[in-house]
Image (cartoon, rainbow, N blue to C red):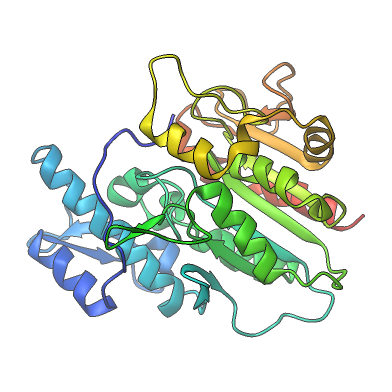
Length: 322
């Protein structure tokens, strides 16, 4: 269900100037209308800012999309005020200043590569629409302003650098588990919430299995079209035809492929899946998986996170108020 194009992401994002230069060499620049925010930025052509992305073949699209994803990583710092933080060899982005001793912590978890990355819910939308639709920036701002929360942006799809496995981030599952261990002190009592898109739902399932102590701390999990690549969110599978990606994930995160009734029940008790549907956002859709499911208000998988924004924040406010 994730973005179907494929390419190789650079191990480390270049500097903001480098990213802008790369985009310019490809013929593009991000622009926001006067008075607009980073969420209002849209990819436009350097030579004619009234025009957006123009298809010039798959190879060109891959290059542009990869540059757009890297641009979003740089904007996490420059526009959202987050700080890149090391998790051993892995990385995340987080607010440098604590919102308060009782402020909730909210993890934002993207979907699978190449469609998702830190700062990006759906890179095809970052190419063809605005960063409000494809990026995480609106969510970051609203988490801070409406929920008074500290935001932590995961970077779960960087599992290899310079041909070497990144310890603690071997898979999206292990990355989120490492992130939780580093970000959450065992003696803290502040509530935790997660927003996870697409395959991020399976990473959260692994967290509930791998870190049983999280089950009492996590008060809400908002999934936007949460899914597994094969099998189910609660028990992934490797297809009979084989899958190098899933074989890799099974090697480093084997419990993601096992049953765990207690973990599944704890996950389901705090989760709501905002699934792709033509029904109005928030419409209950029973029978759509192991969790409470409602319509995201959009039929396109990458667009579900933006389409469900109001419903997601209403859900988070309700759960965090308990």
